[in-house]
Image 1 (cartoon, rainbow, N blue to C red):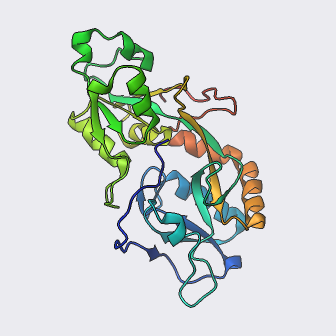
Image 2: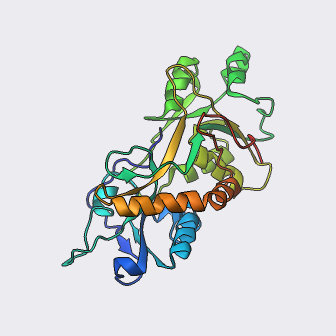
Image 3: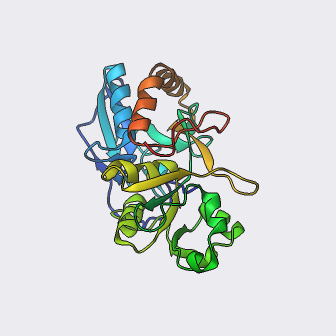
Length: 284
């Protein structure tokens, strides 16, 4: 999975705390990335921002953020970090982590998604309606195809299996520059015509549809196959000993499930049921 963690230079001083110090009982304190669409940003535009607002409102608490780039060191500098000269933790909840993430206690999943193939429409690839169609492209057409290829992504493994490595254009899954967001990079490169397609994590693919004029992008969910897993469950995370907060979040996940699903659909996230069956159409 193209994880939301990676390398960051130790000297980057991006840690910002919004609002004044709040007692734990008065605030819903969230650890988040300030520039990580479609998940979070400092303007509150990500779907994780919206779910955090939903939960804070339900608890009648003020929403307070600790901002830090979600790369290597994120958990250490946010969820596990304390305020200077205080025993208060900087923040208490990470709104999106892979279920079973080993650096935190994760809640029950609140959504499941899959990687998706995306391309700009009306650029010569509109007859591609499934990933399997790439296997049957004529050699001369396949030779012209350029697909973003990310390090550490199951899409790269899939491309190897399907003899598409020669069509790969390499990109880093995460750079040391916190101002460079992978989703925004993919969007820019596709719209500029530097690549024809990309296989990216579902919420990222959904962002391309959500963030652009309707009909600009095609979104085709990928299906896992032998040796390549594309679908994953996502949870919220708290400190491992924090059982009470984990239970509170799980109760909110259950209570607010319809609102959460509506938000994810608004952001065009391809959703799966617990058995891996697609719940949303490929395009909306």
